[in-house]
Length: 207
Image (cartoon, rainbow, N blue to C red; front, top):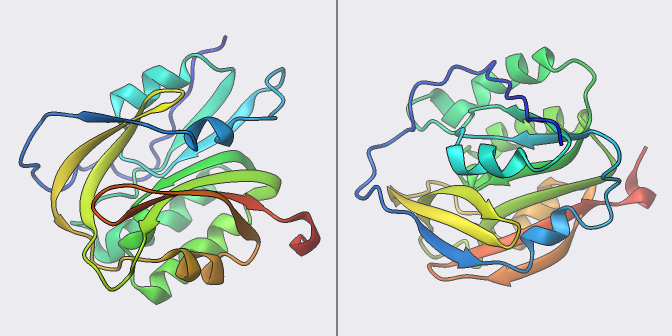
């Protein structure tokens, strides 16, 4: 297997807010493995991690023949939570189209306009068989706690409280409405109003 390569075009200004605990907890997930199911492992996969660059995730991706691009967009200290850095990051990767995108709960930070801009840019870098993993809100009316996320194993998600709640919790319907090239392939309700989602692009919607 080839070692992963990280791309840190977006400035890495630390892990974001101070966390109340440095302790990671672990959750079994049946959805995460499906992000890789059916992909051609004989080719080099292009994988997007919106960030931050977590050592556990980077170690996990060393198992694969892949090119890992870490955007480091997750930083609440930045305006619109990193959206202003997104164009520069995506420009830096050229014409790369990602096979798997790990959006984590970043989709719950930008406001509606910023989220729409992010999806518009991202759409130019996915293809008709891309999988996208994200954390949404089961109910947008309820608080959604902020976490940091990493991959500990193929079926094990690592989470760590980041302090506070996300500013713009998005439900399954909100996400599908904004990401019109995609459908929800699998979903699972987790604790704290978290909704684990695997989205896939729709061939019939692809232009």
